[in-house]
Length: 364
Ligand SMILES: *Cc1c(COP(=O)(O)O)cnc(C)c1O
Image 1 (cartoon, rainbow, N blue to C red):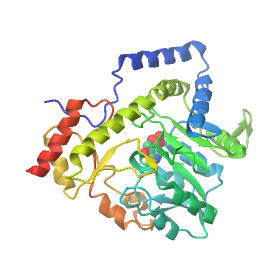
Image 2: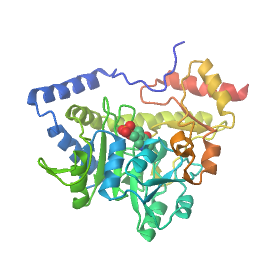
Image 3: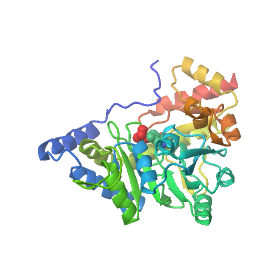
């Protein structure tokens, strides 16, 4: 029997492939290759969709975070609180602007613990970066209240949660700036590297636009120090096609997640939405006390799984000797997490194979 793949980046839908080829063909014909009209259209549409005034396209989610931090003038001497569990880019963005990442513990929902973040605030703290982990929005009521009381910036890392919402508001709309990755693995995915930040303040917007391209306020007038982080026009054209298809993709992922949870709830801890949060299931992440055994069992029957991630950010060699913060619950949880295949391309038959295999493992 063939494997059940965790992720499949081929474009197999004929309509989608044709629409993408036509969109790229349009760019080839108009020839405005760098920051062409598709970039501006995508920025407006993402801003509107997230309920923001401005969008600024850039070439990765990592660069969106770096630009956001620099736009808020966060740098050496400043501390920024990040969850201990995230893709390493979240901490690296903070360190790359010269600030210190301070690692907060996570709750059982795998998102930042607001109580832990609060304990870690010092006079040097400038911002908190909540990561909407695996597609589930963080507790934004508590985070917004904390940010307001303490006059800290929230910079949302919505890289895994584009189009997720909390109390009816989209992720990316809560903080001073919202950041998204649109690399080819993310929910709203380009065919390469891409990112976007969203905000409402016109001055912050103008600084972000300059920081996206060498700190140039206009073509020949440099006001800040920055690299080249422009969003590619061809990727923006691809993203516009995929934005129109996003509702369908999210619905499929939510349906797959519901089907898995209905079967697996007795055996493992399944992901759950809170009353206010709408999950987009970037990954379908379960928790199991026999994670490693379960993973080996699934591999043997041809089911690909993923551990997102085996190391917490403060445990990587680059941080391990100097990491500040607390992460005991995160350390316990990363030994239990396992992501099962549940993406939108998976067939009903494959989804049954996944649940059958997990049930067989526990019933044995
Ligand atoms: C993917 C990801 C990033 C980095 O995005 P890139 O576009 O790959 O640079 C940052 N944070 C989180 C939580 C991510 O999942």
